[in-house]
Length: 300
Image (cartoon, rainbow, N blue to C red; front, side, top):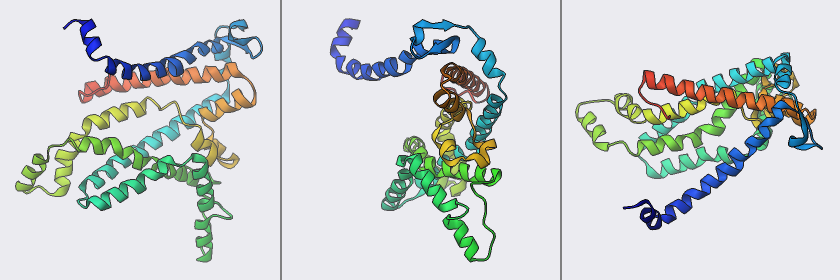
């Protein structure tokens, strides 16, 4: 079958494929034109093309900022701790849901667990302050009524860090189970039946059948998460953070917001964004290479 004949026969598939291609061209590759702002003394009125070329001067200025390194450290720290706490949570949750035999209870549980993903971080921030606030927080109100000292969940660094991490788990763990549950549906049930005949306990079936079956999915998602170690969402640290815990809550995304939108230093903000993209690419390629060497699995 010639290529032209194949295309005419399956033109609907190519038409569907064109939609994501158009999306990536417009919203992913198109904005790359603006990367040159990092190498120019960008003037909003002169535009990108009319701004003066300054080479790597902006990079030297950013890398000379003490604040840049503190926000970079916080970004790595929060992402690393998030990986330790949030990454295993959907795996454990998916296995627990998979082991439930009651169909109606499983559906209700999944629905309840998915809901936090669709709640805006602005609303979640309001919930966090209502629950964990020092003065008006429900939890501290209960502690005080019991004669206990209130816990500074949002005003001291270590309690804030724990609150930040477990808020992220609550928001993302349920939605993260979808891919793992999809992988688990492809596991051959005969393996479990054979293991049961051999006298394997439920924990042994999870260890020797369930986890190895979803290993490729775990490795793929781990590589993608490692690639995001230097990039971090703006919403969670900005909304939950405050000046009292700025030593931990100030990250690269909030740094870009301050120097870019608040101070109008678009060149410096673009430099930080480009730095995040390049380092993120290095992390993805590096983690993929290590994964192939250690486990034989990779995504590239």
